[in-house]
Length: 150
Image (tube, helix red, strand yellow):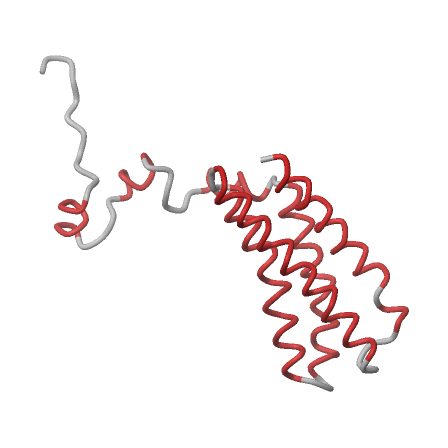
């Protein structure tokens, strides 16, 4: 074994012995949290646009919750689900990536429906929606292309 370096065990025995995942193993396997791994998602255009949509919807959620707490909570969950699924899809392979982008697209469409419902119920004014809906629709269009392209 001259010239070879013995690798540390990353499997279940190492996990049990250490009481957790060895950070060196997590890095080798592509897991764990690192500034390098985070930058892959931060630079991802669809992810950034979905976060911008979350920021745009946040004040509307607060306004809706003044009238209907349940609709506000549902809107918060579906709009938050979009960037989370985009980030997950960006690190997934094959069909799993497409499934995550499909989940994100469904949540984005649910966000649009929730905002339109809030306007129909009189919780929001019609003039509050066009810019926000355009942002979310742009995310939906990107996700549609990404889902088909992978």
